[in-house]
Image 1 (spheres, rainbow, N blue to C red):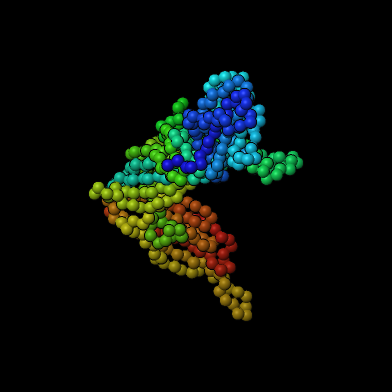
Image 2 (cartoon, rainbow, N blue to C red; image 1 turned 120 degrees about the horizontal axis):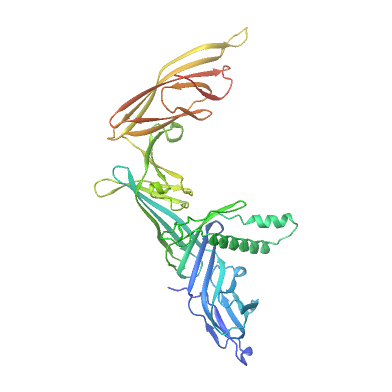
Length: 455
């Protein structure tokens, strides 16, 4: 259902004697020939570009534009002839005192006939979000991944058959303002806003010129020439522009969820992690997706969103694992999804032995033990009840001044106090791994660090 007060541009054809009655011969413009929405969530701004065919007469023409009951910013409204632009010129813009939320363009034309024009403006109240659905096969080897975009329109205006474009990233609109301030220009709040809108429009136009997400069969796709969406970098800015496939109708007050891409037979990695300081005592399982062509993804970066992860239960149904928020995923980057604990993988770590030596004492007359070395021996036992081999990545945080050693390949320091290593455990097998550490405690501790030594 159309809103009662819609965007209503009209053209007035001036005839002799019509000056005394401004509303005589007002003709409503034909429907939009096209409309494009470029939605920038970070500023709650959407750049709207409408194209319409207007019949001009030679001489003066008046074009009325109304934004009643909408969130259109009137300071951003711009009129531009697309055809016969050398013969059609806007002489001035007036805001009638007796007609709130209306402006009139006074257009001088040397051309008579129909010409395409573009009306552009910024509006608020339109937003978008991305979400994804991943469904693993029963063997946890390959998955289907579907991407979606939801556009919500609360702008007060209907947009029918619109091309929808999404800005992902950050456009730094304060750089130009800060540059003017450094040069001694004093800007009022209204001037700052107009300048921000102007800079945003320029940035979006530059992104379009760089082929950022034009064409293609997917919302987040390559363009018609096979080029990936361009990365636009301007000072502190870095953003992408994506185009949703086809034309979309988004009435005011409605939301519309659209498919953005479909990927099938996507290989992914299953990795178990044991990090008691992060996840607790039990190992947790991760699905790791790579956004690259080798893994049947990687057509473009993926925006922030929520990924819902399911697994085929082998009985015609699905098992839900998690819904996890993810940040922007560049091409050739990985996304790690925590799908929770697995009761078929059991991890235990016990202290087999502890001995103290090299005691340090305080000064007489009442000497006390103030420092010592403590040698500890651990044994880790991992029992894999699954029918296939697993990889378990282990991290231990060791407080103090520590020397640590064990016989595993790839033992390394993750940071100055954390050791990391990865174990392979065959299906249905148990693996036991011993390790040793010497802790310098009390006054024997000279620094906070872990040093790797031979076992």
